[in-house]
Amino acid sequence: MSNWLIGFLCVWLWQTQALGLSVVIEVVSLPSNTPASDPIYIAGTFNGWNPGHPSYQLMPPGGPAYSITLQGTGTIEFKFTRGSWSKVECQADGSFLPNRQFTFGSADTLQVAIAAWEDLLGASSTALPNVVLLSDSFFIPQLNRYRSIWLYLPDDYYSAPDKRYPVFYLQDGQNVFDEATAFAGEWQVDETLHALELSGDAGCIVVAVANGGVNRIEEYSPWVNPLYGGGQGDAYAEFLAQVLKPYIDAHYRTFPQRDFTAIGGSSLGGLIAFYTALKYNDVFSKAAVFSPSFWFDDSVELFVAAHQKSHPMRIRFVAGYPESSSMIPEIRSVYGLLRQGSYSEQELDTSFHWDGQHAEWFWAREFGPTYLWLFASQDAVGSTTTSAVRLIPQPAFDQVVISGSLPYGQPLQVRIYDSSGVLRRTLSCRAGQPVDLGSLPSGVYQMQVMVGRKRYETPLVLIR
Image (cartoon, rainbow, N blue to C red):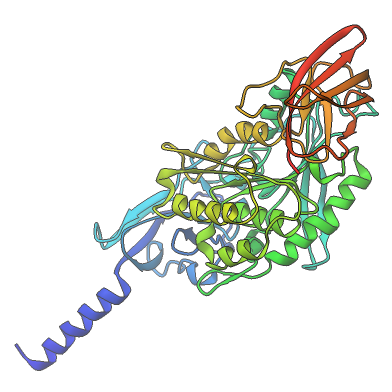
């Protein structure tokens, strides 16, 4: 064998080991209504699911197909877009298309057909009537950008004009309420909350903030990943805490206190929700962290160590074992750091599932249980109180609302007993309005609520 050929093979072997295997992906069929001027992109696990990354634009067909060459190892998941998640591919009938998959080494060329685009099918809205568009151009001064924001107003928002509500701020707002705006399926938050209200829940306002499309990765991470970008998350978090929340409190009937304010999100949205909750611990008291992208940067652990709580918190992590090999270990690592700091077991919860996937249907299924854990009334061992009297939030921090099936504004007489049966506090209040718990220390109490001649008892868990 010649020295030239030996050298060539050595270089080829080195490149294969360094860069992995390669595949040429060809799109051999496009929907007939695809705009001729729109570029086609591929987004997946290899580029942080960026729907419009310039390095992942398919080359226009000089021959029969759009194509791109990818290098890597193992199995990747991906989809095709026209530059944003609002322009993602779907099934021919308009239904959600699961992620495509390819395993390197199984083929040199992969030919695929794109059946339809979600934005060109005219999908009908699935949102309930009490979902409203707050604005399609809400200004974000920290980023000099505009964003769509939707609201869910509880069923009795207009019929009970004196009633106030907790508020839940959610990321990736396109996916929260409506299949017509969703880029990967919707969370059905409006249907979930409506069903809970029918069963006696006091209701909650939800503020769903649309992601920035091509700027999503930039805005949802405070730190810069050398491959995927990021770095604008701190400005976005400041917008949520110091611009959007004050606006919502000024224009809608909210409980503005932190005890009644939650934030949540999934994937990178889960990362920025977690970051915002810890940094603005004086604004948010609860965080729903679904399948967080803690892999994005190791700085998250330094951040947790540097941001111990200044006020009580409730944080729930939700994830699926099949999502990735690192997902749950990373959550457990962050959980451990929180516990090493000043967070108690009662303030943290993990919900891991063997069927959980990195997908909207999974987060939709788990939103209800997470909402109930963050807001609903439970005693120290998890048994729920009678539907006639509910405490929100529970555990409580500084204030609590007595609700349930009681008419809003109903006069109440309340007595609070400690675990030894000693009467610690007597007060008068009204159903649905905040009750200041004063200087009572942390602990488990028994609350006796008198409604006329009827008496109800319910446990009260107080965390300071």
